[in-house]
Image (cartoon, rainbow, N blue to C red; front, side, top):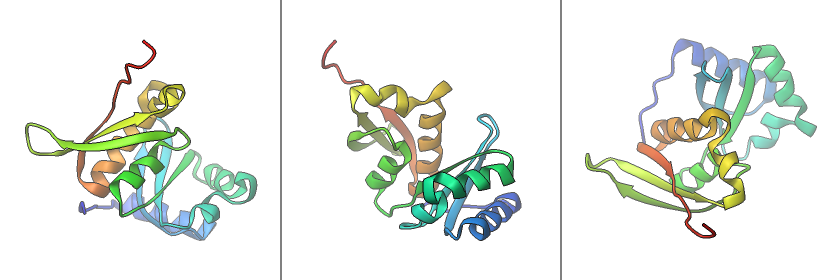
Amino acid sequence: MAEIKLTEDCMQLISKFENMTGAGSRDCIIDERNDRIIFVINPGDMGLAIGKKGATIKKASEAFGKRIEVVEYSNDPEQFLKNCFLPAQVTSITFSTNEDGEKVALVDVKPDDRGLAIGKEGKNIFKAKKLAGRQHDIADVQLVQDDEGF
């Protein structure tokens, strides 16, 4: 597993988030570019983090003054990446190594979900790359181009 170094700001945000939601969090990324905070939530705590009809996460977003996004942690890198891309449906993930011997994930999503997986200005693929690197030592995450239907 990758070694995660949390800044003091992140530790404070995690503490505040856990106190507000009751959901355990193991990591946090402050994404200034997309004006959001991404929390990696302990398995099984998504319901606590989101709350009924999204009330808890909405309250947290208002308290932090930024959009809050949550991704459920998994020890399995494949499942973790699927969680990163939700609600886009991932159809397959294969792992390979690049020239430098680093782990690379090749992710295939349903063709209709491709835009959702990439996100506005690439923000969802950015989130997946950042979190995969921090949580599972995956150097790069790439969406594979499905040639069917072209």
